[in-house]
Picture (spheres, rainbow, N blue to C red):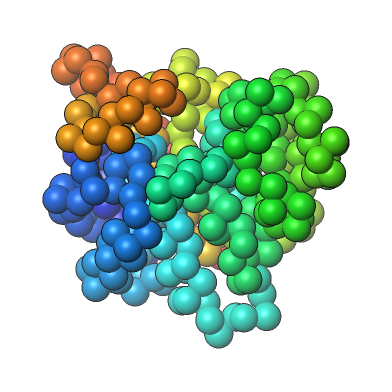
Length: 299
């Protein structure tokens, strides 16, 4: 059933959800968290394929920490495979995220680079990343953004308040839609999605939300819950697959390069027990509301 969620229990971050199917995947946490090689990701995708029910038989997939957002890639490929009969209808992907997740990464794929892989899939019409307020797309980090999907018109950034003058000079201005605030961004994105109905995969990283809504272990955006729900509501009858990430968990990487890169990116996974428990309770309540809204938007 489309309202039966799946929990990829990699880090213990997601509390029990009504009607859930939970996969115990803690053995994969260190290998996948933050980033991994392509061979590792392919092996994990095969594990998922053997463990998950048929695609049409479950609802939103919860992945735990935003450190696992790159797992959206195999989930979207699974969605494409399940819709092979509808090849004439390309899949649109909508990502709500404070970051573009289209950054250069030389070691395979990580939670900040996976969007490029998805945007260039032939069966994907476009990827829209909405809610970006991160300096990841600012002038100082322009060189880190993959340009190919932006130039091809396969990837659109919806951002608020970031100086992206570089986009004009590099010929990708049409792919970077700038707004003065997140409210205007959310209204425009909702209007666009409502006026261009098509089969859509929705991925939400809760770091898109302001810290007053929920706490994550990455730098956060400024979106309110109401703004996000308006965007989800605009997809009424269009959602064919979905996932949610951005929960919080404590973890110490045993892999040296992951410790170095995550610290360089400003990530904080050393969370004291009491704040962590409080944050997870707030996360759980938001998960329930988001899952209900997404279930209502399924086709």
